[in-house]
Length: 161
Ligand SMILES: [Zn+2]
Image (cartoon, rainbow, N blue to C red):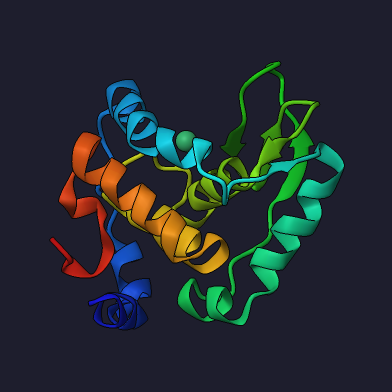
């Protein structure tokens, strides 16, 4: 099952030609709920602010990422204006002074890879492929359950329903 799912991602760059992100804050909250259990799982690790650039580097140097997302431009890492909130804007991803976590870094990278266009289907699918690549199968299963419970089966890439 999973082999079929991830093989189908080879056709992915095409999907980015169209944006389907709408819904603003309501959609963001829906996504946060769907992602919540991933924060608690043992495959998520805290990342000090000073170590975030290394993780970002690892993701953007990854051969599979470069191929799948068409040599994306690596964002700068900054300090968030908010004490507890990370965000992505332009070519910048920003995290609170204390840092973030594997999940929060992959989340902001997913925004970068989808043109900072909200928390819609393409964003959710992107987050899941990054979680699979950089956190593994068990973490992906946790996220998949969250998507099914609080989000949408459409958020699971490769038409796996
Ligand atoms: Zn977000």
